[in-house]
Amino acid sequence: MTQTISINDKQRLQLAPLEMPNRLLLGPGPSNAHPDVLQAMNKKPVGHLDPTFLALMDEIQSLLRYVWQTENPLTIAISGTGTAAMEATIANSVEPGDVVLIGVSGYFGNRLVDMAGRYGADVRTITKPWGQVFSLEELRTAVETYRPAILALVHAETSTGARQPLEGVGELCREFNCLLLVDTVTSLGGVPIFLDAWGVDLAYSCSQKGLGCPPGASPFTMSARAMEKLQQRQNKVANWYLDMTLLSKYWGQERFYHHTAPINLYYALREALRLVAEEGLANCWQRHQKNVEYLWEGLEDLGLKLHVEREFRLPTLTTVCIPEGVDGKAVARQLLNEYNIEIGGGLGELAGKVWRVGLMGINSRKESVDQLLGALRQVLPN
Image 1 (cartoon, one colour):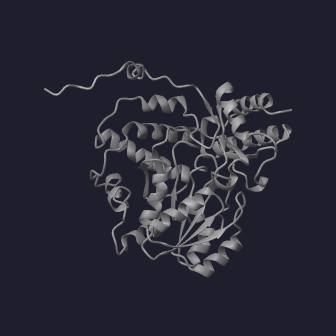
Image 2 (cartoon, helix red, strand yellow):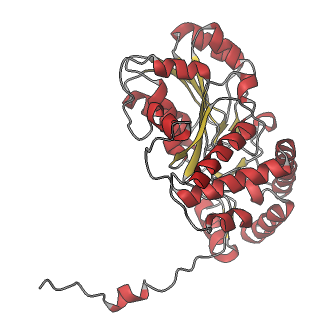
Image 3 (tube, rainbow, N blue to C red):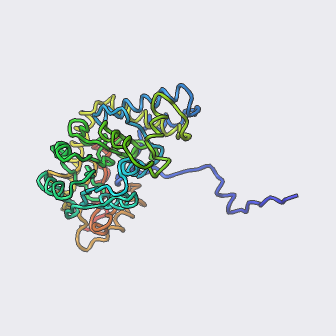
């Protein structure tokens, strides 16, 4: 008879009921989830092909179309984090040899470059210093030069806190017969987005930022133009799990089994989207803008400088320049350990130079700002 492996005293301590600290999450994500979202996630699971769950999937699709302002039929949630939804846009739109032009002005533009290259794209880039944005004229020059099949831009660059204007870009892409792919990870739910009006063909996001939901169920959408390119592919989509020719049959009328969806995360996403719709999209955008302006004023009153020009700052994420002589990591660590407040550090070129402060979802409120500013007054050197 095979002898079982015993549990030692140290392991037995690890089997105590789970307890986690109650943090105020004011970093680049995740944000705190709304209590109603957490309550929804605790409901009993059903099967992933149960009629009630399929109806919930339909509700998610309808609500995602609302928050993105699109009528795209293929608007779904990917069973994975925002990075999975990012890869889904690349995997389904890029064929080997396609010229893909990517605007790089931060960390996540570079991630798109890496992903597109892995799918065989002929990647070309247009670059700006981190924290700046591209003008329509700069984009036109690049598109005229490279004649890409796809132009990819980050609407809300999470590493810099900059918002890329998209007005007129869709028309430019149609003029040169290319698709427009947009990262809305840090903008969905907190920043005005009009996918159809802007002519966006592919977009992705996440659940844990502006929507105020735990991570793991990530919005994805494709326009009719993008679907046409998908249907005309010469080769199968190289990523089976993210292949929209398969996933569309699970989310569409066929309801063919594809994978076991994260049932309770979809409960949470549905509730988070319902809360946005209940508040009203325009009201949600206005709330984020009002509260971030209050934050900006408070930070400047503390003598802190902000990295991005006001015109292009995100209402969901602010990059704060770390003052000379201040240990940015030590400040963030003290906020976490003594005040239970999380803020983020810089990525890539901005590592050690900025803090990243998020006001997203339920955390975009005056009380959150006051709590952070009060703690900073205690932590920062006079």
